[in-house]
Length: 161
Picture 1 (cartoon, rainbow, N blue to C red):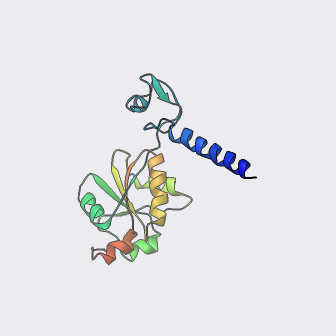
Picture 2: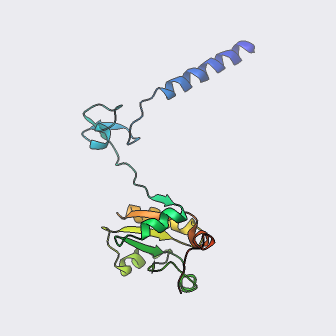
Picture 3: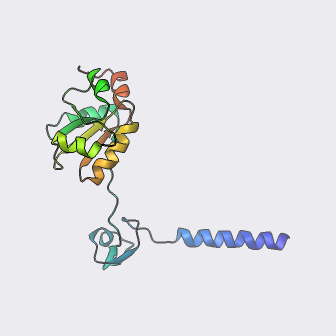
């Protein structure tokens, strides 16, 4: 029994050691030929290529970071709450694009172009994270207010009606 347990433990350690030595590269995908992201990685061959594009992400910001970033005229502020929530108070200059099953249609109707950075928020940060993921998939550069308008108000930031 002890011999079997020892053999099992050695096998686990060897597997973990082999896994830890797997080369890591920026794209985190299997490499094949010709992709710039893998070529930039020190662990990929010069002729490496990802079989899948790297995942695009969005920035999650604190209230202060968000406030600084939305001061730029190049940023479009997007509130993804329901219309009645928006009317109760929102960040100055925000556009209301409701997060629901019709989000893409709502977004298209808003006229917000993909060449703008979108600063997205909701009530607490849950819906805006989902909206941010969708926006990134649609080609937008996105920043997201981590704590939503509740955190914004708790920090003493202005809201308008």
